[in-house]
Image (cartoon, rainbow, N blue to C red):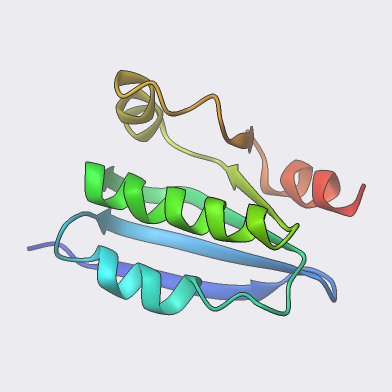
Length: 114
């Protein structure tokens, strides 16, 4: 079983950046939710998916839960640097378009500052 790592970084006083690495699936999405869902003090959250090797429907559900929660609170979720395989899974499910996404992390952060 591959694991999941979530590293948290600050990108300004109101932006949290999380580098998500490994696999986000049925066995690891509880860890993702535990580490990322408590973003109450940040106005924007950026998920850097550059090191995410695999995402299942459970992982996508966890990201959607985060997006919905932040949207209800008037906050933003932005995805960045997702690999081709991850994007293909989102697209296969028809779920890529609802997300703001950027090729580079600095572009995602800049969008959060606007």
